[in-house]
Length: 465
Image 1: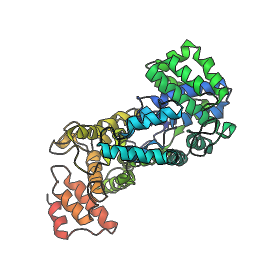
Image 2: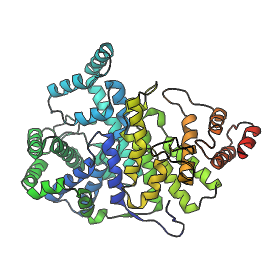
Image 3: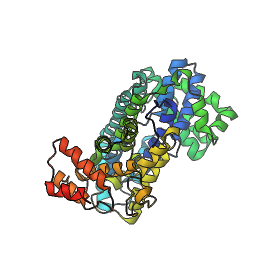
Image 4: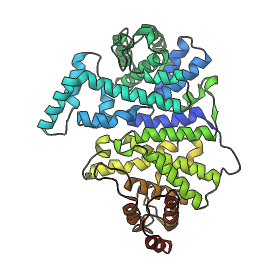
């Protein structure tokens, strides 16, 4: 991990959030770069309608963070529709605006891999309570997203833009049924931008234009539609959207008022906030990332990790599971054993974590430490089968912190274990999955917190291992 003991790390806010936006893309089942492309589209629309510098800055971050709350309804979607939440969300964005399209979508999506009795029961429930269900899912998503934006220190205008993303110009949207100018401008631009991207990616520019025209004055502000139609006549607009260096272009067009360097404290807040996004993916992981961060910090301190490195360690621990945003909730919440194909998807979250975190220029070592938390000292872990000295101290700390918290929390396949049971299980993995010094540091930290620890003989035994 980087040695930051003698310097303060400052990172461009836009770079950090652009990188994290890829995590939101995979949770929404969208092709990588969806939020980046929406930001390109929406910022150009904002310029076309004459927004000033601060307005463009707030719009810019609304677009990058529009899906902050997307993980909070994933588990509920999987439960209600008996399906993969990611494919559901992907396909939901491509349905037409009419009632018949929505009806067909429910029939196509619900319980496709379930037996007929379960499927019919689920469809019946959705048809009976459809409006209530839709509002519940969207309200959860929007309220949670706005709350996290505030935690990340964004303005109320950004938070409101995220909260009202699914409102429609004619009042038929959710969660409040706002109409016309009552809908925040940033929300109107963000909804229009995401629909343009979805239809352009799946069916091409002409389809995107036609879809926008068909929803004008219903879903979309007609003035914003006209602004987009003017942009759509520009070949440069579409060429830029399709360019391989789009992320660099989006970062380069960051409005002056949005070109902010974040300090260590702000980076801590952002890491903690994204930890909440990760944990919201499943009801069984509430608070998991924060607790793993806290345990890692306590263990690291007892092992003499430098204060500045300790801060980076805690961030890595908070973000270690960011790749799970790309795993279906039907797998994460499954009460029984996973099938082979499901295990492949579950194990892939480590690779996804590395891919997301390594997009941030200063996060190279942090990304590796976080993404390797399922490696084992005996070489039987994943994703790379590292062993022994190939596994860094930081990774060893995150591994045992994650292991302990997973055992002491409820899971879909078992109830939470006691401290006694958990430490006993972990002690049997010393030298195989976990590091002996990390184990001793964990026990010491828990003891100072007043936890009900196992007998002294167990602790003394493992100090000698």
